[in-house]
Image (cartoon, rainbow, N blue to C red):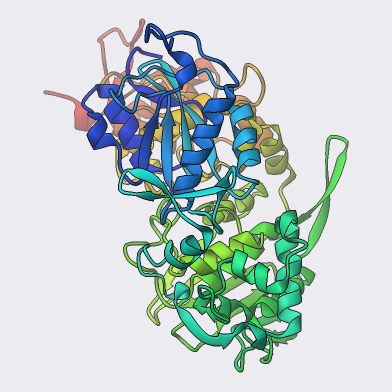
Length: 585
């Protein structure tokens, strides 16, 4: 790596504010006052500094007192609307980048232990000007988080103590408008025993510490109670109140246009019970195949299980509950269509939905997440893409309808063993859940050009600039391997002053059983048009033919397309053909 700058050591998630701060730290244009805010804080690893002289030194990999301080500050963010992040290894007084030697796995474990497992912080490594720092990102918690019996939340740029009841009443009220936090007219004692029993069962399954709580305590801990009253808030009412009209209308047909074989649209139940009934029926009509990879035999569904669940849960949690129409779930063979009333909110669109997360009802989503029904915040849509790509299926379709409504279409299929085995082999193993990797592989495998560039990938990867897209592709190419020596992607040799390009390695192509283009001139012409030139080695990389064949084919190709030789001899080191549009007279 070149000196200066920073890079993530594992695939970054799109926390734009953290990325901006790291860039500011790297170029030295920061001041501590501009960096610290209610969303971001800097923390020095005190074990890296000699307390007598102030000089930097080698730090401890497991400094307990530092872990406790990080846990306190992270919990403070967890108790604050919107959460926040810590950058560990930078002085909060001077902004000096001193770095940290803290063991990342140990710190993750200690944060989990110190907060009783109630804080969903992620810890990642980064480098700032070749100095290792840690980034601790903490989302807003489902329930108040204490460290050593004390609760803190953010006020300005300070963490102050507060009691848990104040947090439960005020932390969402202080956030951006969230209708599901408001009071309802449904009393807790009006909730059916079935709904409360299911709520407690799910809560205990997701968090064992809730297994001995009373139903009203579970309701409170999940943030479904309005303050200290005997009433549910709107989120609790949506999830638990007995409904006079069904919230979900599920139908199953064998084929498009065929008769409905199953219909679920029963009133008189809570939404929680409806979700159970619809999930069970959808699973019953979701075929499975027994797949063997190595010595392991497993069952793989035509629509991956968590993808099916995520689509249904998104359809009820992100919908507009001011609309009386139900969320419709149409199950046709191996295709699932979920249509939810209400369009996208604010500036979310199908083109940025993977990188732009903002729930319509945050309190409701936090409760559903606390029940273990959906993935962690902001990754559910990613999982739909990665899970379908992993079995070799088509990408999900997400569209806004004029009604307004949002429709998600999942097209399942019998799993493709080659694609399953490929993703099983990818290292690090978390690559199987990395949407950037999955989408880049899918694009390279399904394009008429056997390579990816920023311009060809920007829309699929949902990035706003070519520079950002290049960084994502470079990260994917340098991170993921098939074994110690073989990368999933390899960087192509590109002419000077042209955009970088990457292609799937030969081993990747073989594992996925990809064929080269039937007409090799198609990718060759695309390359020549993009780069203004093409050489025999580039032609060989684009078409998979041998070196001598590449020379022969390229000569014919150049004649037909009117390309001009770069030298009169037509041979020699560096010889190539120039594309007419880039040729000077």
